[in-house]
Image (cartoon, rainbow, N blue to C red; front, side, top):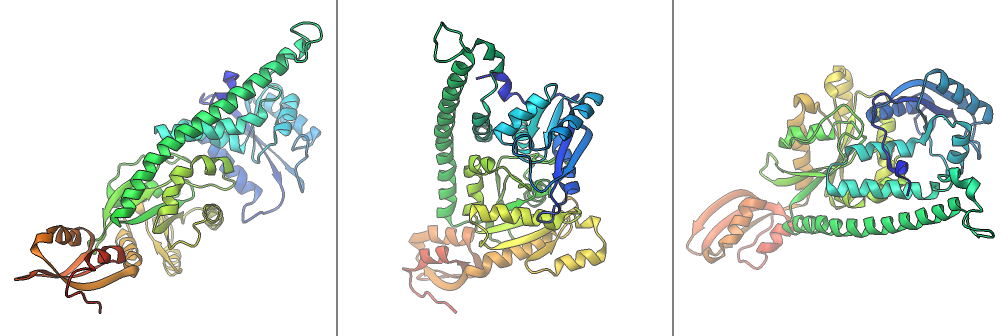
Length: 431
């Protein structure tokens, strides 16, 4: 397989021209919004934007995405600005990309998906994350292998008179076979890694610990929220997709309940489906959570559209019906009136995680949701079953505790799965 197919642009001297088509406002996103985000993605990759080309059209050109005349305009701009990259805001089909590479021979042509994949490749740190990214990138590459060996076209009849395949065709078939083999290897290795993660999740599920997953648009401040609540020490940068790997930390709520809080990969508008599939084991943390804490950058000019984009992904994951709280973050950048209006929205809380403003209110709201399935019981635990008393102290809120001749008399408030552990004891009561 050609080495250049796996190279990631990291040179800070890379200069990019952005290309987008205007199909009017879609789901709250204007062309200006899309290109502004594309510019931030480009900056995250380490390239600088030196020009932008737009075209108004109802649907992309099936052959070249943009018209031939517009492609010539892109080439002229790229030449004038000494650009090395042309980045399209939408996904290109393999044939569109091949045709554009023919029209723009002096630059590297990539689309939004490849840009995001390159960023993920730069930011993946864990073994699992690197495997997930490599799988997504190779699956993206497979249908684009055709044409990578055009320099061998002149040798199509090589290998002897009457040969069925030329050198280019033979190399293409070899690359496809090697690529499919590598995809199989990655899927098997990921299945093994995923099994270990599933074992950890199953252990937490058996313990009955309440699980909260942080979800939200990339750069909304999820890692900042995790750090502010748990001192997790997670990397925080003003970059899109600064962190990719799921991070789980223990957190004690004000009522004494211990929960787990998990930061997950951020979402984005037009999130490539291949990434959702590749990051399945990481996103299973979202599927297994008892509560989704949706972190929103309230100061962003397009926050409502970002919320809608996250909800699309949650729908795709099949978790949109889970209990949710919306934490409107960065509210210290808003006026008092706007903060107050956000706090009045159903299921919402206003915070500023970086300055720790509003976190007590957030913890109180999480406690209230977590307590909705709790039961209150009074039970006498025999002295020879002290493990249950320890369980009560670890997993329940103790209202009263008294030592009697028969055992330890406890009045406690706990989740149903904890209450079930005391079901065979005497003097069980429910109000």
